[in-house]
Amino acid sequence: MKELTLETMIAVFEEIFGRGLFWVMVVLAAAITAAYLYVLVRDRAMSMRKFLLAQLAMPFGAVAAVLFVQAVTSSHFRDIGGPVDVIVLLGVAVVGAVGAAILVYTAQSLLRSKVPAQKVIGAVAVGPQPPKMPSNTSRSA
Image (cartoon, rainbow, N blue to C red; front, top):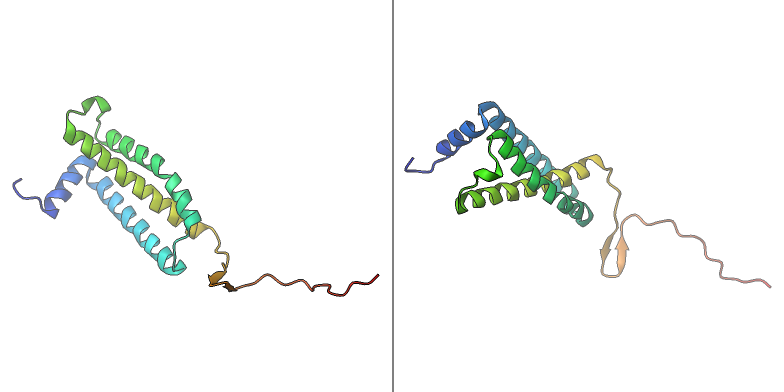
């Protein structure tokens, strides 16, 4: 294995996860990515409220990714032997965290109905406005 090619990486991941599980994960990742891109194009902006909730899911995604990889590979924390193992473990955690954030953001956007929001341009609000109540300017004694 003198060269690191795409075919080599696919073969290594198929060996680690098994052929079926690896390709199921690839298809799921592609579907979630496509849904995320659809949501970004549809909404034309990122919702910071949804993004905050997605960020709150990141630690859970990181832990879940590490535990998933350890369960699939039949390894434990006691098997960590050196700095490279720690770097790989942190990489798995980062990928799990980012994946969880994308999944939660996409799920929120697809499952919640979109409420029309007002766009503020300068000091003028543009978009659906709440109905104005008639003002009572004349006072009678």
